[in-house]
Length: 206
Image 1 (cartoon, rainbow, N blue to C red):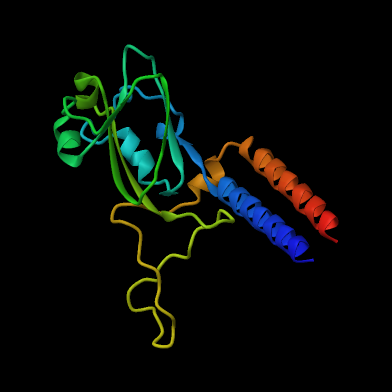
Image 2 (cartoon, rainbow, N blue to C red):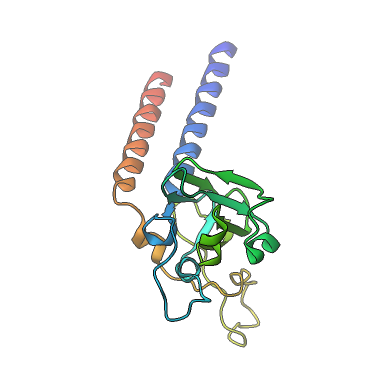
């Protein structure tokens, strides 16, 4: 009897791990850099001092676990992860990391700013550069925490509000609208497989 109870406990641990894995997988997004994924010198703008990539990023919500995809011609360009000083100076000599495979997918593992520049210094000087500010982890169901109310609108009896997003980031539903439609059936398929596994284990236990 004791051996049977141990086996049942082990099965339920496996079920819990499967459910947690499915929840995490379904909640992450992969964004295409600039909205298209193309990593190149932006088209001429009215204000050449403003990066088109940063304008896109300021209207996009990034969270820990999300990823960003860059597509470019290998051998002609690359993606460098750098610090702020290298970003400002377009310094390509001391990157934190270098990607040159032509199809780079970078996953955000912590909150805070990330600085990307082209491996071609001239391209970087022409605004092929990007700052991404990543907030905390995304909720398991893919919904974002409520925004903090404006100053002076909090009731004395209200619970503490979450901190506002980093300065310069405009919150919009862009991620939920821009997520690749193919990702939804994939997540649903994973969830269905997990449900089938749970049902099978439950049937075996009883």
